[in-house]
Amino acid sequence: MDAQRALLDELMGTARNLTDEQKKKYKEVHWDDKEVCGCYMVRFCPHDLFVNTKSDLGACPRIHDQKLKESFEKSPRHDAHVPKFEADLAKFCEKLVTDLDRKVKRGRDRLEQEVEATPPPVPNEKPEHLSVLEEKIKKLLEQIETLGEAGKIDEAEALMRMVDMLNAEKATLSQQSATDKVILPQEKKMALCEICGSFLVANDAAERTQTHVTGKQHIGYGMIRDFLSEFKAAKEKAREEEKLAREKEAEERRKQHEKDLRIRVRESDVGRRERSRERDHERDRHGDRNYERERSSRVGGASHKHDYHRNGRESNRVRYHNRSGARSRSRSPSRHGYRRSSPV
Image (cartoon, rainbow, N blue to C red):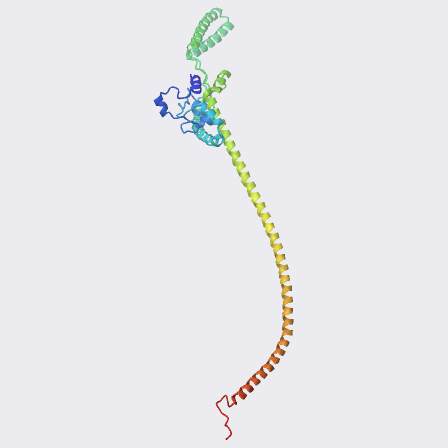
């Protein structure tokens, strides 16, 4: 029925039975919707593993659709969503295994308590009347032997007839005791399946053991445990790879730091040598300038002194000439308003 429904969904679509009004409100479901079961998309849904068993989880509240699963597997976003879906499945499976392990522990404790409480087997006791008969027969046989030695044959034969009667009664009692005896069934030794927590009969027939191993409950919990082991191993491997990558990156940074440090030290040495050469060059240049300055100062000082004296003499002559001219001009009568008197 489910196969036919899936075939019709594939050919006609999931909205094939809806009316036009319903189709207007119909929303197409995609594999990344919240209503879709991510566990079913990536691996399996635990709800599907234990149908009609003691561990039945009921129907899954989310959508299981093979077409959506195929669409998810072909999607370019498949690899990006797989870790999230696997993490959700691992969380669900971890809870189931935790509950199952508690159940297994309780079952193991129960078996240990039953083994401790089992009393040791008690040997069967003979019926009391049968023991009395055996004792009488034993005494009569001793008397018969004594009478035979004494030659009392008739008395010995009479006792022998009594022994036969007692033996017949003994045989009857023995047969009745075997019939009335209650035969208790042998206690079966139980064992516990560590995979699914089911109780088994130890050393049971191979057919019954095979039936248990191929049962839904055993296979379902086996799939869950295998997935958890694989998931944890992959997670541990990814953690180790991440750790190695960090260590490698740190080592590369350390090497790069050492390389940069050597370059800086080398550049510092080169710069120091360059600065030293520049200082020496500047020192040589300053030395030449000082020498020229000193030489110029020596030569320039003497000429300046000679010029000073020469200029001094010339200035003195100029000042004297000026003073003389001023005196001659100051004595001119025409300049001071004097008139030369005319001859009378």
